[in-house]
Image (cartoon, rainbow, N blue to C red; front, side, top):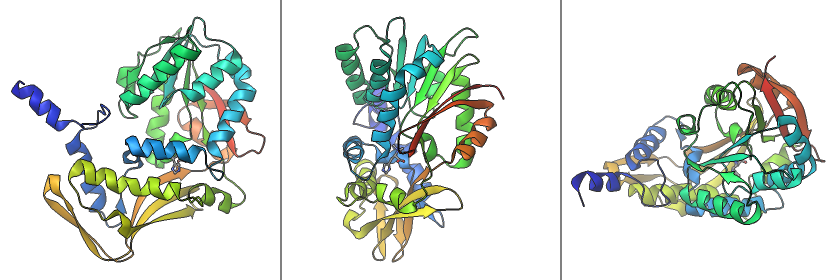
Length: 333
Ligand code: AVJ
């Protein structure tokens, strides 16, 4: 092997063809763990095991989001497609593509449509391509391997004529903090283009915060395992030595900010080595790490946010229990 390609192989993650560099991960982790209130990005939750655990979360009785979103897609698929009349479909964070498949099957339309599934995981993209080839063979699929920071350079820019539908399912927008969310809104608007439509998954504020809390702290403990797996990801990729069993899963609803947080709390004082960086981090008894923020919206909050990016909600589609929304947006005021 040539020296340059060896260096390349060493600096990239060994699993799943992820684009995120090991040293980028290492320093992001160190940044987060050396703050006065420790934080780790929720993007690190989704390694192979994390993705499997998230799949199990989607089937939990408490986690209504996935089912509610599928219900809207089945019920409103035709309306969504006739509103957007797309030639192109860009699916940000496509995963297995099951949501888009449901949308297209409900609308009964695939011909003349170009589908760009965007995902950071090659394994997910492969699964998505396979599923579409099997169930929607007419669909032209152009996969794009990119994460949320890099998709704008990887998907072709829309022209003034392009009729493009951009989807981001699951409520992922709510995982960004408001400052980054504003920047991300602008990227989504640019991706859709002047004649495009956005379809975004939005988890709604529940009158009863316990319903939301239960969705992130299920009785079977799957979300707890999902959260703790983050420490395992760090152990595996950064030669760290977190004692995963010494941390508890914790969920907090932050009323003022309108979001729910997942945290991990150290049971006792400990010191964690990060082998790759030859650094260590100290935890006090009860010290917490924030691992995820997930915003819960009212329709009004959401519309205000959309206007930051010059986008306007044209249709507000919800499930029958009004727990989740799939608004359709276009440019304009
Ligand atoms: C897929 C990122 C939207 O925030 O609800 C599920 C992830 N975290 N249970 C969410 C998640 C805990 C989920 N998103």
